Length: 387
Image 1 (cartoon, rainbow, N blue to C red):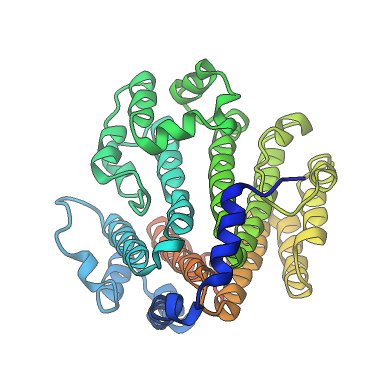
Image 2: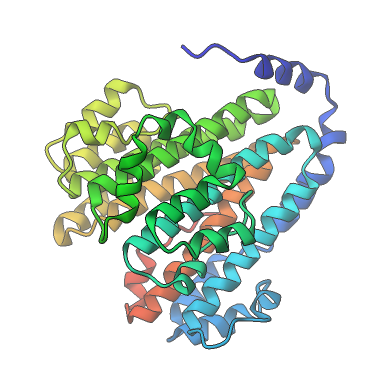
């Protein structure tokens, strides 16, 4: 049982003494207005219908993304132009929301935005292991966290494992990450080896990435707890995401042939699943059985109906994406519920950011699918559309 911290107790008292309409009225009104700017289902369908990545870029340049296409690097592909534009847009949105968030909730939101620091570090690590160029890696970064653009550029430019390790550690966020309980339990030599080893070692890389994710959930959960009652919804959202993260990690590691011990060592904390539930899913005989067990614990009746169809498709073609989308759709619906029912709190702000992130991910899937020549119906299967 986790004992409430002193900060958590103070946060609860402070939350009870504040007049919420006065504190959150402006920021929540702004966020709800910003939600009207999210791409609609109709617009997503329009993007699916266009033929090329260039057409996706042209379509987006007539939306809220218009200004984000200015001052692009020379000699890049249309796919890369879209990647850069949506990353710029999301980063600007996140920083705008941080500015309008009430002071008492900014620590919670900053911890929440740490997810993008983790995303960027994981993107850099995987990009280097797969032999991607610095330019290719940079196009996939989302500078919405605490690691600055200058620091990210320095990390991306690292020429070897030792330099990469030290450049990450030199940032305030990276220093805290490597000293966290999640990563400090992994020998430094093993981390450096995982960074330097060429190619993609699915199981070993998942262990390192899961440790980084664990740090984020630890950080975000503690920040949400210290936010008192106003942060309860964001705490529920983080817990739901931690559950989804663990489910997807189990499915991917099981597909890669990992054993139960390796899988359990890669789980993140902060979720609602009990240890018994996690062990039961991790011990499943195959991916399909693991997914079925996870669906019983995680999905609502609506999600289970969707999952049944995804499971049928998975058994037909073996594509893990069918199952992943079913769980991700369920998480997105939970985010929408938080946004709708959170009145005058940090929950509405976090819920909007989740939806904005899904929009960015959907555009990425569409433009990458176009670049790969995938048919619209195949791309549509991977999209997370809610609301």
